[in-house]
Amino acid sequence: MSYNIWRNLPADMHPMFDNKMLRWYEENEKQRPLVVLSCSYGKDSTYCLLQIVDQGLPLDIVVFVDTGWEFPQMYEHIEKVKDYVKKERGESVVFVHIKSEKGFDNMLQKYRWPAEGRRWCTAEKIALSNRFYKKYIYSKGFEIIEIIGFAADEESRIEGKRQDKKKSKKIWSWFPMGSQEWNTDEQEALLYCKERGFEWSGLYEHFHRVSCFCCPLKSNQEIRVLREHYPDLWSEMLKKEDSIPVTKHYVTFRGKDSLHALDRKLGAKTKLFPFEYIKSAPKAKKKKV
Image (cartoon, rainbow, N blue to C red):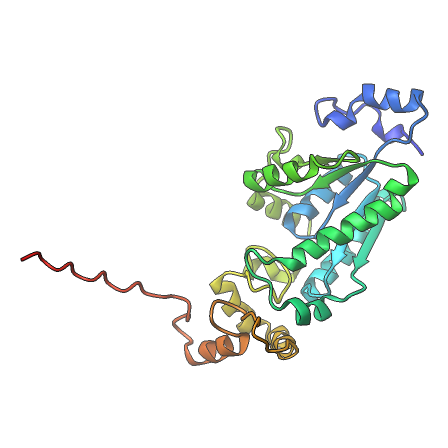
């Protein structure tokens, strides 16, 4: 495995890119760690990928876990990004596209709609990535530097992920957007991608975060936008809800409302979003006699 791209890198960029470390691996005839970008192809991870390629930094594998629930425009964006990387790096970067054998639609029927504190979909994506690392990387004697695209203004997410990764001895995490060298927030990342011609077919004009189209954790406004501007996907969501068995453990889409109930409310109230609750006035305290 070539070490050429690792030479003459800024030593303060990341401790695993230090030339002293590289010499140790060579002298001991060890396989250098593989550099892996965990990529959702949203604005932040796309920004990381573009910067890595443009700066000539090491990159071996790009891992994407596909739920099958991405916006069609996202799949188009993924192919566009891959074409750009292949044009700049040839076949030196391996793109890994992971899908669950269980199928997320099947898991939806079992686990019901995800919710805050019940994000089984996120847990499954992490499990799929870890299984890939174990089967195809760790088993070959490699260690990993995992690049994660958390923006500089997401300190809590960075710290939380750091604590998780401390449990593994075979993986080091690097959060370049939060580093002193990059120090890039979400808006700066999005602007950079757009300047490079990556527009996601306008998805970021409608959504702050481009997650799975059927995610119940979208903001109230994003739920309305989804119904109004993406009717085909909204219809698909209604069909998905119909496939969920109604049991005593049934979980609604949002709060006390099923997706069908929300659909009716949104159809009836075009000006007032149904979640814009008004707090009732506090009851007047009785005067002591």
